[in-house]
Image (spheres, rainbow, N blue to C red):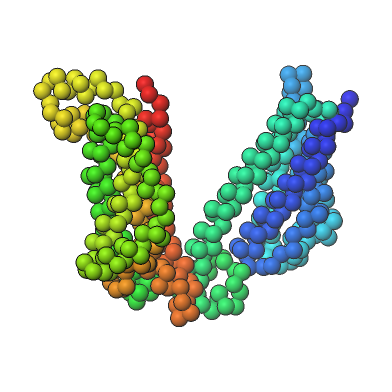
Amino acid sequence: MMRIGTGFIAAILLGAFWGIVWMIVVGLVFTLFSGQSTAPPLTIAALAGAVGAAIYALSPVKTRDRPKSRGPRVQATMVIAIFAILMLLTFGEPFGLSLAYTTGPQLIALAAFLVALWWSIVAALHDQSSGNLARYHLEVIFLRFMKGLGLTIFTIVVALPFYVMVMTSFKSQQSLISNPLDLSIDLSQGLSGLFSSYIELFTVYSFGTFLMNSAIVSVATVIITLAFAVPGAYAVARLKFPGQAFLSRSILLIYMVPAIVLVIPLYSVFSQVGLRNSLVGLMIVYPATTIPVALYMLQGYFRGLPSELEEAGLMDGLKRPGVILKITLPLALPALASVALYVFMIAWNEFLFAFMFLDDVNMFTLSRGVVSLNSSEVPRQHLMAGAVIATVPVLFIFLWFERFLVAGLTAGSVKG
Protein backbone atom coordinates (compact mmCIF):
# COMPACT_ATOMS: atom_id res chain seq x y z
CA MET A 1 0.00 0.00 0.00
CA MET A 2 1.34 3.40 -0.99
CA ARG A 3 1.98 5.82 1.84
CA ILE A 4 2.05 9.58 1.45
CA GLY A 5 4.07 11.59 3.91
CA THR A 6 7.11 13.82 4.19
CA GLY A 7 8.97 11.70 1.62
CA PHE A 8 6.30 12.42 -0.98
CA ILE A 9 6.38 16.16 -0.25
CA ALA A 10 10.18 16.21 -0.43
CA ALA A 11 10.05 14.36 -3.76
CA ILE A 12 7.58 16.87 -5.25
CA LEU A 13 9.67 19.85 -4.12
CA LEU A 14 12.87 18.27 -5.39
CA GLY A 15 11.34 17.45 -8.78
CA ALA A 16 9.96 20.98 -9.13
CA PHE A 17 13.31 22.58 -8.26
CA TRP A 18 15.23 20.36 -10.68
CA GLY A 19 12.66 21.04 -13.40
CA ILE A 20 13.26 24.78 -13.07
CA VAL A 21 17.05 24.41 -12.84
CA TRP A 22 17.42 22.16 -15.87
CA MET A 23 14.99 24.19 -17.97
CA ILE A 24 17.08 27.31 -17.31
CA VAL A 25 20.37 25.53 -17.99
CA VAL A 26 19.24 23.71 -21.14
CA GLY A 27 17.47 26.80 -22.46
CA LEU A 28 20.59 28.89 -21.98
CA VAL A 29 22.82 26.32 -23.68
CA PHE A 30 20.32 25.97 -26.53
CA THR A 31 20.34 29.74 -27.06
CA LEU A 32 24.14 29.83 -27.23
CA PHE A 33 24.36 26.88 -29.61
CA SER A 34 21.54 27.89 -31.95
CA GLY A 35 21.42 31.66 -31.66
CA GLN A 36 17.64 31.53 -31.12
CA SER A 37 16.16 33.43 -28.18
CA THR A 38 14.08 31.20 -25.95
CA ALA A 39 11.33 31.69 -23.39
CA PRO A 40 11.66 28.62 -21.13
CA PRO A 41 8.33 27.74 -19.44
CA LEU A 42 9.63 27.48 -15.89
CA THR A 43 6.23 26.91 -14.27
CA ILE A 44 5.41 24.05 -16.61
CA ALA A 45 8.91 22.59 -16.14
CA ALA A 46 8.43 22.70 -12.38
CA LEU A 47 5.04 20.96 -12.71
CA ALA A 48 6.49 18.28 -14.99
CA GLY A 49 9.38 17.66 -12.62
CA ALA A 50 7.03 17.46 -9.61
CA VAL A 51 4.74 14.96 -11.35
CA GLY A 52 7.69 12.84 -12.48
CA ALA A 53 9.18 12.80 -9.00
CA ALA A 54 5.77 11.93 -7.51
CA ILE A 55 5.40 8.96 -9.86
CA TYR A 56 8.86 7.74 -8.95
CA ALA A 57 8.40 8.26 -5.21
CA LEU A 58 5.02 6.50 -5.08
CA SER A 59 6.41 3.32 -6.61
CA PRO A 60 7.74 0.74 -4.11
CA VAL A 61 11.39 0.96 -3.12
CA LYS A 62 13.54 -1.73 -4.70
CA THR A 63 14.32 -4.51 -2.19
CA ARG A 64 14.96 -8.24 -2.25
CA ASP A 65 11.24 -8.87 -2.15
CA ARG A 66 10.59 -6.38 -4.95
CA PRO A 67 13.58 -6.70 -7.32
CA LYS A 68 11.78 -4.96 -10.21
CA SER A 69 10.45 -2.02 -8.20
CA ARG A 70 11.67 1.37 -9.43
CA GLY A 71 13.34 -0.39 -12.31
CA PRO A 72 13.40 0.60 -16.00
CA ARG A 73 9.61 0.41 -16.30
CA VAL A 74 8.95 2.92 -13.52
CA GLN A 75 11.69 5.23 -14.74
CA ALA A 76 10.39 5.08 -18.31
CA THR A 77 6.88 5.92 -17.05
CA MET A 78 8.30 8.90 -15.19
CA VAL A 79 10.14 10.21 -18.27
CA ILE A 80 7.08 9.74 -20.50
CA ALA A 81 4.92 11.63 -18.02
CA ILE A 82 7.40 14.53 -17.89
CA PHE A 83 7.58 14.63 -21.68
CA ALA A 84 3.79 14.51 -22.09
CA ILE A 85 3.14 17.30 -19.60
CA LEU A 86 5.84 19.50 -21.12
CA MET A 87 4.60 19.04 -24.68
CA LEU A 88 0.88 19.30 -23.91
CA LEU A 89 0.98 22.35 -21.67
CA THR A 90 3.40 24.23 -23.96
CA PHE A 91 1.42 23.25 -27.08
CA GLY A 92 4.44 21.58 -28.62
CA GLU A 93 6.82 24.48 -27.88
CA PRO A 94 8.96 23.27 -24.94
CA PHE A 95 11.39 26.20 -25.21
CA GLY A 96 8.93 28.82 -26.42
CA LEU A 97 9.80 28.12 -30.07
CA SER A 98 7.92 26.19 -32.67
CA LEU A 99 9.47 22.81 -33.48
CA ALA A 100 9.23 23.79 -37.14
CA TYR A 101 12.30 26.00 -36.59
CA THR A 102 15.64 24.54 -35.54
CA THR A 103 13.97 21.17 -35.11
CA GLY A 104 17.17 19.20 -34.61
CA PRO A 105 18.70 21.42 -31.91
CA GLN A 106 15.36 21.65 -30.08
CA LEU A 107 14.95 17.87 -30.02
CA ILE A 108 18.50 17.48 -28.71
CA ALA A 109 17.84 20.11 -26.03
CA LEU A 110 14.57 18.39 -25.07
CA ALA A 111 16.33 15.03 -24.78
CA ALA A 112 19.04 16.65 -22.64
CA PHE A 113 16.39 18.15 -20.35
CA LEU A 114 14.64 14.80 -19.92
CA VAL A 115 17.86 12.91 -19.24
CA ALA A 116 19.12 15.51 -16.76
CA LEU A 117 15.80 15.65 -14.89
CA TRP A 118 15.51 11.84 -14.85
CA TRP A 119 19.02 11.42 -13.46
CA SER A 120 18.54 14.12 -10.81
CA ILE A 121 15.34 12.53 -9.48
CA VAL A 122 16.70 8.98 -9.51
CA ALA A 123 20.01 9.95 -7.87
CA ALA A 124 18.24 11.71 -4.98
CA LEU A 125 15.27 9.36 -4.39
CA HIS A 126 16.44 5.89 -5.42
CA ASP A 127 16.41 4.56 -1.84
CA GLN A 128 13.79 6.82 -0.26
CA SER A 129 10.10 6.07 0.22
CA SER A 130 7.06 8.32 -0.10
CA GLY A 131 5.98 7.84 3.52
CA ASN A 132 6.98 9.75 6.60
CA LEU A 133 10.76 9.93 6.70
CA ALA A 134 13.05 10.40 9.65
CA ARG A 135 15.14 13.53 9.87
CA TYR A 136 18.20 11.61 8.72
CA HIS A 137 16.57 10.56 5.43
CA LEU A 138 15.29 14.07 4.78
CA GLU A 139 18.80 15.40 5.32
CA VAL A 140 20.14 12.79 2.88
CA ILE A 141 17.72 14.01 0.19
CA PHE A 142 18.60 17.65 0.91
CA LEU A 143 22.35 17.00 0.81
CA ARG A 144 22.03 15.10 -2.48
CA PHE A 145 20.09 18.00 -3.95
CA MET A 146 22.63 20.58 -2.75
CA LYS A 147 25.53 18.47 -4.03
CA GLY A 148 23.98 18.16 -7.47
CA LEU A 149 23.04 21.83 -7.54
CA GLY A 150 26.55 22.85 -6.48
CA LEU A 151 28.16 20.71 -9.16
CA THR A 152 25.77 22.09 -11.78
CA ILE A 153 26.42 25.72 -10.85
CA PHE A 154 30.17 25.15 -10.65
CA THR A 155 30.22 23.50 -14.07
CA ILE A 156 28.23 26.32 -15.62
CA VAL A 157 30.36 29.03 -14.01
CA VAL A 158 33.55 27.37 -15.26
CA ALA A 159 32.51 26.00 -18.64
CA LEU A 160 30.14 28.67 -19.92
CA PRO A 161 32.58 31.63 -19.97
CA PHE A 162 35.24 29.43 -21.56
CA TYR A 163 32.77 28.28 -24.23
CA VAL A 164 31.69 31.87 -24.96
CA MET A 165 35.34 32.94 -25.17
CA VAL A 166 36.32 30.16 -27.58
CA MET A 167 33.25 30.44 -29.81
CA THR A 168 33.50 34.23 -30.02
CA SER A 169 37.11 33.91 -31.18
CA PHE A 170 35.89 31.84 -34.16
CA LYS A 171 33.27 34.36 -35.27
CA SER A 172 33.61 37.10 -37.84
CA GLN A 173 32.82 40.72 -37.14
CA GLN A 174 29.77 40.60 -39.40
CA SER A 175 28.25 37.55 -37.68
CA LEU A 176 28.82 39.04 -34.22
CA ILE A 177 27.05 42.24 -35.20
CA SER A 178 24.15 40.48 -36.94
CA ASN A 179 23.46 38.03 -34.08
CA PRO A 180 25.54 38.32 -30.88
CA LEU A 181 23.71 35.35 -29.32
CA ASP A 182 24.71 32.93 -32.08
CA LEU A 183 27.84 31.21 -30.79
CA SER A 184 27.68 28.19 -33.07
CA ILE A 185 30.55 27.24 -35.37
CA ASP A 186 30.18 28.14 -39.04
CA LEU A 187 32.25 25.51 -40.87
CA SER A 188 31.35 26.97 -44.27
CA GLN A 189 34.00 29.68 -43.89
CA GLY A 190 36.81 27.12 -43.92
CA LEU A 191 39.78 26.77 -41.61
CA SER A 192 41.33 30.05 -42.74
CA GLY A 193 38.15 31.96 -41.93
CA LEU A 194 37.57 30.04 -38.71
CA PHE A 195 41.04 30.81 -37.35
CA SER A 196 41.37 34.25 -38.93
CA SER A 197 41.48 35.99 -35.54
CA TYR A 198 44.34 33.78 -34.35
CA ILE A 199 46.25 34.29 -37.60
CA GLU A 200 45.94 38.07 -37.30
CA LEU A 201 47.06 38.01 -33.68
CA PHE A 202 50.36 36.37 -34.61
CA THR A 203 50.91 38.28 -37.86
CA VAL A 204 49.66 41.77 -36.94
CA TYR A 205 49.58 42.04 -33.13
CA SER A 206 52.90 40.28 -32.28
CA PHE A 207 51.34 37.63 -30.07
CA GLY A 208 54.22 35.30 -30.84
CA THR A 209 56.49 37.77 -29.03
CA PHE A 210 54.09 38.01 -26.10
CA LEU A 211 53.95 34.22 -25.86
CA MET A 212 57.74 33.95 -25.86
CA ASN A 213 58.12 36.70 -23.24
CA SER A 214 55.63 35.00 -20.92
CA ALA A 215 57.37 31.66 -21.36
CA ILE A 216 60.79 33.16 -20.59
CA VAL A 217 59.59 35.03 -17.50
CA SER A 218 57.58 32.09 -16.17
CA VAL A 219 60.34 29.51 -16.62
CA ALA A 220 62.93 31.86 -15.13
CA THR A 221 60.64 32.51 -12.16
CA VAL A 222 60.29 28.77 -11.55
CA ILE A 223 64.05 28.22 -11.69
CA ILE A 224 64.89 31.16 -9.40
CA THR A 225 62.14 30.27 -6.94
CA LEU A 226 63.24 26.65 -6.62
CA ALA A 227 66.89 27.67 -6.36
CA PHE A 228 66.10 29.73 -3.24
CA ALA A 229 63.14 27.78 -1.85
CA VAL A 230 64.70 24.30 -1.81
CA PRO A 231 67.69 25.09 0.44
CA GLY A 232 65.61 27.51 2.53
CA ALA A 233 62.83 25.00 3.13
CA TYR A 234 65.34 22.25 3.89
CA ALA A 235 67.11 24.45 6.41
CA VAL A 236 63.86 25.32 8.17
CA ALA A 237 62.72 21.69 8.20
CA ARG A 238 65.98 19.93 9.16
CA LEU A 239 68.60 22.27 10.64
CA LYS A 240 68.64 23.83 14.10
CA PHE A 241 69.42 27.53 14.31
CA PRO A 242 68.24 30.58 16.29
CA GLY A 243 64.88 31.86 15.09
CA GLN A 244 63.96 28.66 13.28
CA ALA A 245 60.46 28.46 14.77
CA PHE A 246 59.75 32.14 14.09
CA LEU A 247 60.96 31.85 10.50
CA SER A 248 58.86 28.75 9.95
CA ARG A 249 55.70 30.49 11.18
CA SER A 250 56.28 33.87 9.55
CA ILE A 251 57.10 32.79 6.00
CA LEU A 252 53.73 33.84 4.63
CA LEU A 253 53.61 37.22 6.40
CA ILE A 254 54.64 38.91 3.14
CA TYR A 255 51.17 38.16 1.76
CA MET A 256 49.68 40.46 4.38
CA VAL A 257 51.09 43.36 2.33
CA PRO A 258 48.89 44.02 -0.74
CA ALA A 259 50.75 43.98 -4.04
CA ILE A 260 49.31 47.37 -4.99
CA VAL A 261 51.21 48.90 -2.02
CA LEU A 262 54.52 47.62 -3.42
CA VAL A 263 53.94 48.80 -6.99
CA ILE A 264 54.67 52.51 -6.49
CA PRO A 265 58.03 52.17 -4.66
CA LEU A 266 59.13 49.39 -6.99
CA TYR A 267 58.15 51.49 -10.00
CA SER A 268 60.25 54.38 -8.69
CA VAL A 269 63.28 52.21 -7.89
CA PHE A 270 63.15 50.26 -11.16
CA SER A 271 62.86 53.50 -13.15
CA GLN A 272 66.02 54.85 -11.51
CA VAL A 273 68.09 51.70 -12.00
CA GLY A 274 66.85 50.99 -15.53
CA LEU A 275 64.90 47.83 -14.79
CA ARG A 276 61.50 49.20 -15.70
CA ASN A 277 60.20 48.14 -19.10
CA SER A 278 62.36 45.02 -19.08
CA LEU A 279 61.79 41.33 -18.47
CA VAL A 280 64.63 41.29 -15.93
CA GLY A 281 62.57 43.48 -13.62
CA LEU A 282 59.74 40.97 -13.71
CA MET A 283 62.21 38.15 -13.04
CA ILE A 284 63.14 39.95 -9.82
CA VAL A 285 59.63 40.82 -8.65
CA TYR A 286 57.91 37.52 -9.43
CA PRO A 287 60.29 35.27 -7.43
CA ALA A 288 59.99 37.68 -4.50
CA THR A 289 56.26 36.95 -4.42
CA THR A 290 56.49 33.20 -5.05
CA ILE A 291 59.44 32.16 -2.86
CA PRO A 292 57.47 32.45 0.45
CA VAL A 293 54.67 30.13 -0.66
CA ALA A 294 57.23 27.75 -2.17
CA LEU A 295 59.10 27.70 1.15
CA TYR A 296 55.88 27.00 3.01
CA MET A 297 54.90 24.12 0.74
CA LEU A 298 58.33 22.50 0.62
CA GLN A 299 59.12 22.66 4.32
CA GLY A 300 56.02 20.65 5.15
CA TYR A 301 57.03 18.01 2.64
CA PHE A 302 60.63 17.85 3.85
CA ARG A 303 59.42 17.35 7.42
CA GLY A 304 57.38 14.37 6.26
CA LEU A 305 60.40 12.59 4.77
CA PRO A 306 62.10 10.04 7.05
CA SER A 307 65.16 11.67 8.60
CA GLU A 308 66.76 8.21 8.99
CA LEU A 309 67.48 8.11 5.25
CA GLU A 310 69.48 11.33 5.44
CA GLU A 311 71.29 10.20 8.57
CA ALA A 312 72.27 6.99 6.79
CA GLY A 313 73.66 9.05 3.93
CA LEU A 314 75.70 11.16 6.33
CA MET A 315 77.08 8.03 7.98
CA ASP A 316 78.10 6.72 4.53
CA GLY A 317 80.29 9.76 4.01
CA LEU A 318 77.99 12.15 2.13
CA LYS A 319 78.09 15.84 2.98
CA ARG A 320 74.90 17.78 3.55
CA PRO A 321 74.70 19.05 -0.09
CA GLY A 322 75.19 15.49 -1.30
CA VAL A 323 72.39 14.26 0.96
CA ILE A 324 70.08 16.91 -0.44
CA LEU A 325 70.95 16.18 -4.08
CA LYS A 326 71.07 12.37 -3.92
CA ILE A 327 68.45 11.51 -1.28
CA THR A 328 66.10 14.38 -0.41
CA LEU A 329 65.41 15.86 -3.84
CA PRO A 330 64.65 12.53 -5.58
CA LEU A 331 62.15 11.75 -2.82
CA ALA A 332 60.68 15.25 -3.08
CA LEU A 333 59.98 15.19 -6.83
CA PRO A 334 56.16 15.28 -6.39
CA ALA A 335 56.46 18.36 -4.17
CA LEU A 336 58.93 20.02 -6.53
CA ALA A 337 56.62 19.38 -9.49
CA SER A 338 53.62 20.84 -7.67
CA VAL A 339 55.55 23.91 -6.55
CA ALA A 340 56.97 24.45 -10.03
CA LEU A 341 53.49 24.21 -11.56
CA TYR A 342 52.01 26.57 -8.98
CA VAL A 343 54.77 29.14 -9.47
CA PHE A 344 54.54 28.85 -13.25
CA MET A 345 50.81 29.56 -13.17
CA ILE A 346 51.31 32.61 -10.93
CA ALA A 347 54.00 34.07 -13.20
CA TRP A 348 52.07 33.25 -16.39
CA ASN A 349 48.85 34.94 -15.23
CA GLU A 350 50.32 37.88 -13.29
CA PHE A 351 49.02 41.20 -14.55
CA LEU A 352 49.53 44.06 -12.08
CA PHE A 353 53.32 44.33 -12.20
CA ALA A 354 53.42 43.63 -15.94
CA PHE A 355 50.87 46.36 -16.54
CA MET A 356 52.77 48.91 -14.42
CA PHE A 357 56.32 48.12 -15.50
CA LEU A 358 55.99 47.35 -19.23
CA ASP A 359 55.39 50.05 -21.85
CA ASP A 360 57.31 48.69 -24.83
CA VAL A 361 55.13 46.42 -26.98
CA ASN A 362 58.08 44.13 -27.64
CA MET A 363 58.37 43.48 -23.87
CA PHE A 364 54.70 42.70 -23.26
CA THR A 365 53.76 39.43 -21.61
CA LEU A 366 50.54 37.66 -22.58
CA SER A 367 48.44 39.19 -19.81
CA ARG A 368 49.67 42.67 -20.76
CA GLY A 369 49.19 41.93 -24.45
CA VAL A 370 45.60 40.78 -24.00
CA VAL A 371 44.73 44.04 -22.22
CA SER A 372 46.20 46.01 -25.12
CA LEU A 373 43.52 44.42 -27.34
CA ASN A 374 40.70 45.81 -25.19
CA SER A 375 40.00 48.90 -27.26
CA SER A 376 37.37 50.07 -29.71
CA GLU A 377 39.85 49.75 -32.58
CA VAL A 378 40.35 46.00 -32.10
CA PRO A 379 37.51 43.59 -32.99
CA ARG A 380 36.01 41.75 -30.04
CA GLN A 381 36.83 38.34 -31.50
CA HIS A 382 40.54 39.24 -31.46
CA LEU A 383 40.35 39.96 -27.74
CA MET A 384 38.69 36.60 -27.14
CA ALA A 385 41.28 34.83 -29.27
CA GLY A 386 44.02 36.45 -27.21
CA ALA A 387 42.33 35.28 -24.02
CA VAL A 388 42.20 31.72 -25.41
CA ILE A 389 45.90 31.84 -26.27
CA ALA A 390 46.69 32.99 -22.73
CA THR A 391 44.45 30.38 -21.10
CA VAL A 392 44.84 27.16 -23.07
CA PRO A 393 48.61 26.51 -22.61
CA VAL A 394 48.54 26.78 -18.82
CA LEU A 395 45.27 24.81 -18.75
CA PHE A 396 46.87 21.87 -20.57
CA ILE A 397 49.97 22.08 -18.38
CA PHE A 398 47.81 22.06 -15.25
CA LEU A 399 45.76 19.06 -16.42
CA TRP A 400 48.94 17.17 -17.35
CA PHE A 401 50.64 17.78 -13.97
CA GLU A 402 47.51 17.65 -11.82
CA ARG A 403 48.50 14.35 -10.20
CA PHE A 404 51.79 15.87 -9.08
CA LEU A 405 50.00 18.95 -7.75
CA VAL A 406 47.60 16.92 -5.61
CA ALA A 407 50.38 14.64 -4.32
CA GLY A 408 52.63 17.55 -3.52
CA LEU A 409 49.99 19.57 -1.70
CA THR A 410 48.83 16.67 0.49
CA ALA A 411 52.22 15.12 1.15
CA GLY A 412 53.94 16.23 4.33
CA SER A 413 50.65 17.18 6.00
CA VAL A 414 50.80 14.02 8.14
CA LYS A 415 53.94 12.67 9.72
CA GLY A 416 54.79 9.02 9.24
